[in-house]
Amino acid sequence: MNNPRPRTLLAVLTNPPLKDGRRTLNRVTLAADLLGFDRVVVGNLFALPSQATGAITDLGVSPHGWATAKSHLIDHLASSDGVLFAFGVTAPSGPARDHFRSRVRWLIERTVSLGLPTWQVGDGPRHPSRWQRWTSRTHPDLVFPEAVRTSLVQVEAGGYLVEAAGAETIKADAGQDVVREGS
Image 1 (tube, rainbow, N blue to C red):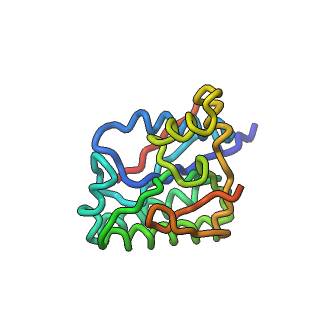
Image 2: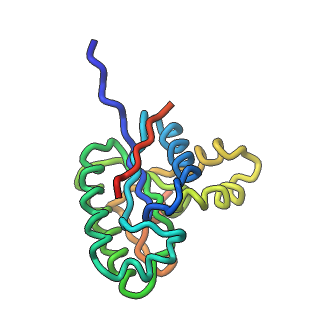
């Protein structure tokens, strides 16, 4: 019997955590399950870990961490069946902002060129740590998994780039295996 390849969702986050990131992994696994994927792979826009994304303002001045993450994203995109934009709605400041914007533009272009369906939660590429806040405001009467299901929006990645929170990001128009990126 011919077993089909598992359908893989690539969740694109900002950067790796300093700890295990279990809550984030559980939430992207929930999204993958709700979208009908068999497994989820996590990729990052920036390769160096930090406690909070605000640290990227200092860590992300050099192009090194951005280039390393890009090489992982190239591999992940080539083997994925869909993409979840979950890198957050706020860009770093200073020189790191230019690297961030460049990487987001590249990600959108690559996603479009590969024809990968793309989702986000609500009206922006919210990080999973912010999903509870979003869903409790927009769907206060739903339990969290159902609120996430209702909030997952398929986006036309090539259709728009908008200025949101001072950075070019995406804005919406309308058992699994968890694999963590090596960097």
